[in-house]
Structure formats: C-alpha cells, structure tokens
Length: 166
Image (tube, rainbow, N blue to C red; front, side, top):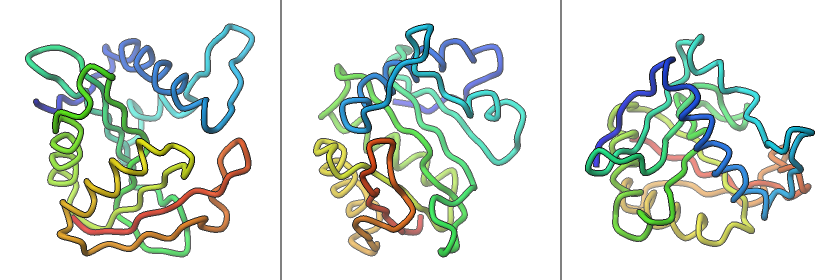
C-alpha cells in the first residue's frame, strides 16, 4: 500500500472516486444528486489551487484502492487544529485488510500535528473503523465529542468529532 499525491492531471480520476464515496455516504446524510445525476464535490478544485489541501490516492499493487483528503481548516472553530481528515474512502474490495489503517497512519505521519476528524454517527462501519484506528494510532490518547454543536450533516444529524495528535 502506498499513498500517491493526486496531480492536477488526475483530477477526473479523483472526481470519479469521490462520486462513489458520496453515493455510499448518501445513505447516511441523505444528500440528493444534482440535475446531472451527480453528487459533486464543491471543494475539489481547491485541492489543486490551494496550499492547505492534500489529496492522495491509496494504491495497492499499482491499483487504485481509494483516497485520503487532508486540509488545514478546522472542522470546529473553537478548538486549535493543524489538520482535518476532509475525506477518506476505500473501495469495498480493500476493506477489512488493514489497508485503511495503514493509509490513515501514513497520512498522519506525513501531516504531524493536532487533528480533527468528524464522522456521521449513523455510519456504523465508519464509527468502528475510526474508533479502532485512532485508538491504535494514538495508543488511546484522544478525545471524542459526540454530537458536537454546529457540525450537522445534510440530514440534520450532528457529527461526532475526534481530537488527537500525530
């Protein structure tokens, strides 16, 4: 497994993977598609024009397995942060094999500092993955605030937010 920085010329590939991610996530946030039948990711182009955003493909044996997207903008503004996990996606074929944790660990190693990570509490597989992964990475030294005020998803559900250091 390796993380490979997404280049501007790979924008369409990332956009395609984001559609798969957003489709899967729509079962929790209930987001609708646009008139073109797409979810769209409004911040995609910023990853190629702003210095405080990083997108990486997760590669397994030279195959696309998913992506990691990191930003410096905080999820919640009343807590200091260096990085936020903006988006994280692993294709089903590669799940439950340690690849997701390894991608997360490598991203955290590349971006050392204080992190925020928000998740939808209804996304039970994600809840289990992040609890296990963050606990393992930090050796249990993290904070989780459930239903953090002002973090509502499209369906009105407040997000749970992890705070930790890498």
